[in-house]
Image 1 (tube, rainbow, N blue to C red):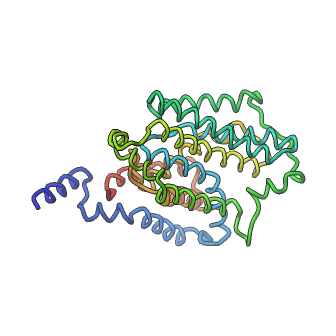
Image 2: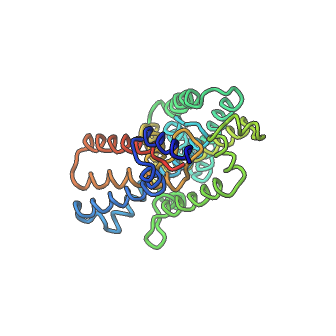
Image 3: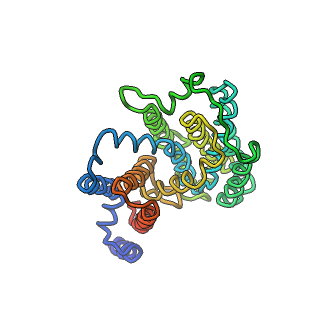
Amino acid sequence: MRVNSDSTLALQRKTGLPFELRAYWGRYGTYVAFLVILAIASIVVPHFLSIDNFLNVLTTMSFVLFVTYGQTLVILSGGMDLSHGSLVSLACMASAALAAIGHPWLGLAAGLGVASFCGLISGSIIGITRLNPIITTLGMLYLAGGLALYFTNGKSITGIDASKVQDFHFLAEGRILHVPFVVILGLVFFFLTHFLLRHTRFGSRIYALGGNEEAAEIAGINYARMKILIFTLSGLSCGISGSLLTARMLTGEPRVGAGTFLLESIGAVVVGGNDIFGGTGNVGRTVIGLMILHFLTNALDLMGISTFTQQVVVGVVVLLFCYLGLARNK
């Protein structure tokens, strides 16, 4: 009993919160925060709760959502991938280059392939040399971003004929029973990622690595192989987003992934309440975190708040959730 009492006091000193509140926030805090934002916005902002507005927000969010799935795998394993924005841009350009000459599905495969290959390179360097993931993916950020600009001299790829790529365009702009197809795709990949993490040996090894790498290796987990697989999947997630952006815009933009995709993928993981150091969390928390960021931004936008002020508000929210993340229930 003495140990439990001391542990509770230690946790309270660490977080500044009572143990009961800490446990409550760890389990339900993110979801409660999301519902509070929705409730306040629905009162302050007219038409915020309209179906069209919700679908618009979910559609915009979906193009970032795939990237957050990859980032979740990386962070839960104890790493971080800073190359996401550049990989999205590179995949977009590769996809657009082939779509522009009448091969959209080959372009889709190229977008997925080039981003996955970049992830494979990052994972191999990290797994074999044990170089810090942040340093490695920072290098890949510059490399992939530079390649996206180099092959077209920084210019956009245009000339994709919408009438010839209707099926490809449907991936990003089509609807099934009024629901955007890209939202349905995002939901499908959510369940696939959840299954991977919770119901496969690979998923349990991701949590083991994030919890304690040394103990995981002693238990027989191959560090190099896991890092290669994790970062390859992370790259694949960027390839999906980049290719879908090509299908949506019918152009290739070399800077389309700059800034937003990286910041939102990490921000969603943090705001969702996942442990930024790995080992604790799930993909559901990441999705809620991304929804908080997007619906909050949407409410501020509908209120006529300037973009600069929106960034300040979102920054404060992220910092708040970072602090409250110390109160997770492990």
